Image 1 (cartoon, rainbow, N blue to C red):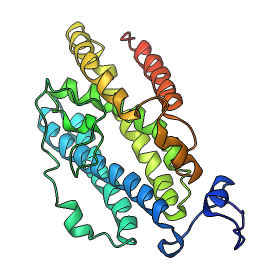
Image 2: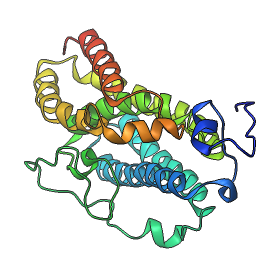
Image 3: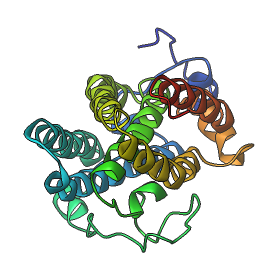
Length: 256
């Protein structure tokens, strides 16, 4: 946490821009609260949708080890959603009603193209609206989105609302392990010619859809979020980091 103090005369934006943190709902101004709630809703909705998706993929698993991995991801993503939803509860969110407001397993047709668009009332990243199509597809999607989550965690663990930042710091190692589980599965797939063909097909499908989750370059909202200490690096930098990680990891399996 920052040791920056907040004089009575200092504007909240200046305090946060200098690395200050907020520690309780009572000292959070209205606009900051709105942006913070949007950030938390996006994470919670994405984790609940991801958990529902991987729950459906458990029965795609070719062996016990893979079933355990998919089950672990299903469980832990639901747990991560609950942890952040509990922070939202401090701001008056009805957590019971919130978690039941959508069918988290619902998906659009496979051929749909949502770009980065959110659907009405549902803040999940657009990638979590698409269906998984078998085990290879689930592994590839988990690798790409898992690496994306790792990059995004470098932002989330530094948000200026201290209770949320602490939750994200607790979550981050488990999210990293989810990506590693995916990479272990991808390595096994890449060991056979048919596995390589399937992986390349899924990579072509998922890569642009995961990339869309980083948002547009030159986002006007970024400046607002940066001033509030809710973001530190722009979308295009995070996307470039992810693309570099993906290329490195895929090349190691002959899939680059």
